[in-house]
Figure 1 (cartoon, rainbow, N blue to C red):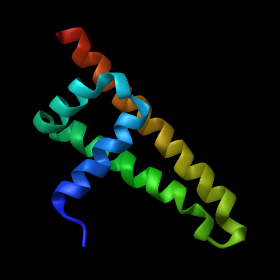
Figure 2: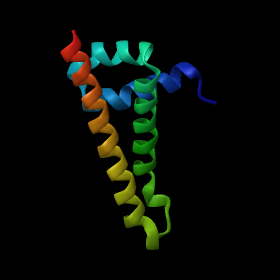
Figure 3: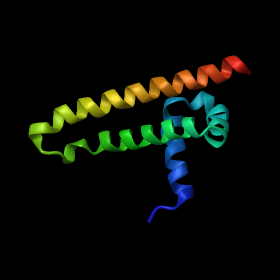
Figure 4: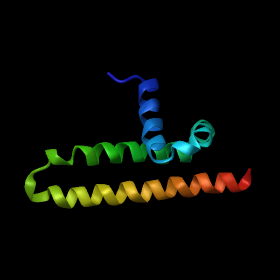
Length: 90
């Protein structure tokens, strides 16, 4: 069973792999902004699904891979935008 702390760490790790230079802002925003936290959580879930797409039947595997990759890319872009907006306000 995964603890809340482990889940939060997995979410944080997922975002930090993409934006390591923004760790301070990511940690701060995850604590203070539920919408941002939810985006980060969605990214972690989508990356996990993408990593496990080979478990799908071959007939639908490439379609699911493309769908999950598109979602990962869109979420990363949205997170990047949120981080840039925060930087512009500081």
